Length: 136
Image (cartoon, rainbow, N blue to C red; front, side):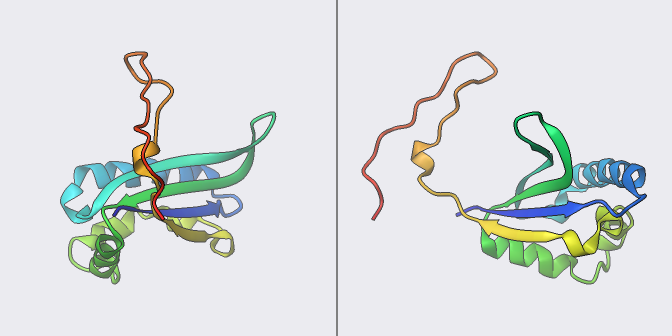
């Protein structure tokens, strides 16, 4: 079962521009070195905004989707000391521009995936979930 790691943070004061540039460098590094990220399914990057006006709150979030908790743990173990091929990763790690006291991390697992749906798609059609009995 896949797992999503949700990491949130604030940018360290005065490091906004370096943070944004490093995020772009980090994303390019991951895309160019996919073999280092075995067990990853996806990563998504967001900026938190407040409702109803959409004003930025200053908090950012990254959603890391792994094939499983075991795959996540194996990746973290490979990368833990930033040795070998992960030494280059450390050079583009945006964590250096985070306010470290603001960082949070949670893990989420999917539920009722057969019921997931999309109200729009690239071809303009919607998907409808298959109705099944609830899991008890």
